Image (cartoon, rainbow, N blue to C red; front, side, top):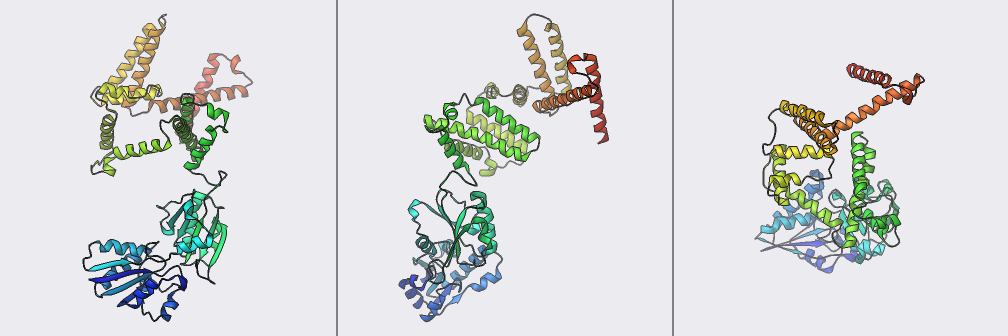
Length: 495
């Protein structure tokens, strides 16, 4: 069986290459280096080691992923032809070496090749030694080319590797700034562990792509964030802030709050978010979404103190729910239309909540939801089983019927009956809105805004005429109201 030895050349100093690696290279039929651009190469030549390289692959390929995959396939083909082949990579074969990863994956079913990986000193060891970092306190190693999926952890040290040039440094800078802010201090290391060539410089993050000496042996070290006063915060900072606010040395008001006392704030913040959305103010949306998120974190902290649940449970629950309710995305089921998705959603929701009757489905709509919204949802759910008018005209007739019933009782003394008939009339109007695909909540809000604008016209016009509203007759105000309507009508026609 042919043998493929994968060896590491260490971080760059000839002192760090192992005797075992030299021995394997001297006794091989063929030696290949991933790249000749490594400080230890001149030393290999002094040892009489003859080798080829894959540097030509970098010129033929358009991406690094393509380079590493092509190298892996070629070295495997070579290993099938010779008894002993050595493939040498910078550093340690298992540390930030994509070509080795490809080789091992491709050779899962290679019956005619035996692979042996020889350990080596990695450039990570050199960085740890030079910066005097103890990894026991946490150290994350990230590929600078994969920051979209490999996220840094602010609570421990991070080493970003493969910062090959200033262009990649610029990309790395932009992604890290989203986590740390532009001014966070970072340490740039080139030629780690190579005496006389090593460069170490600590600078603000925004400056890293301004260094003209960055090359293929450059890495970046980001120390852990150790203060709450930061340029950029994340969800874990918010959780910690809330923990402090609720602690013995925290805020008296925050410590007093309960799930019940916070109810009104969640409702208020949600409406303020809706207001920001309606005004299309994205800056305001950021603020209001933060206020809503604060309520989630606040309730989670209270529950954590009581030992019932915590924020992690909230996140875990919603993730499981989203995966469960999207079998067409995370499973094998095929749902091609939004209508099919919504039908499946309702089906899964009933199964999830163990709703065994249609009445239970209606009762599941929250009691404290705004009445117009709740009416709309109840009618929607009843309509799904056929309890609905066939035409909008039938729904309109019901409005007239309920109006007549209200007329019969509104002058009477039976307050409960009046309340009942007013409710029936509103419910019937909501039904018409549903038929017309109009959200009654939004429609009513629009009407309220229209009322305010027309009232404003009355007040401003009256003031111009030297009149006060409380001194005007209803007839005078009604005249100005109609003027406001006409002005609005004319503006719409002009458009």
